[in-house]
View 1: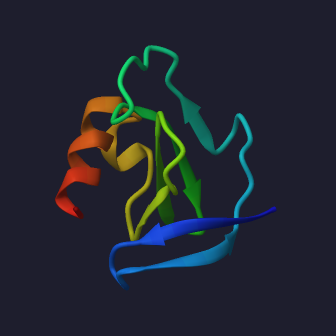
View 2: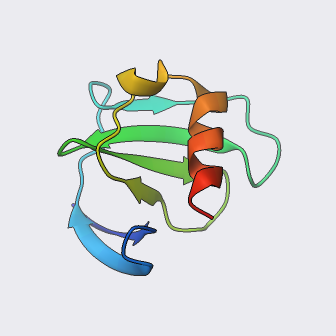
Length: 83
């Protein structure tokens, strides 16, 4: 399915093809605040980081879920580096 993501490396929104399955996505159910990371998804060698709000997922090049140990806190730290 095509979704809109924010690409901080290019400083713009773009459309990509992404699939959200149990094999490539980790969901976090302990979200309370809008800035909490609700899911991380591997897509074509990159990672999508989605927050617990209606903002666009962030796409970070060259990082996978296993690189950050499938960890919600590490995903949030990675996301903050690109603000």
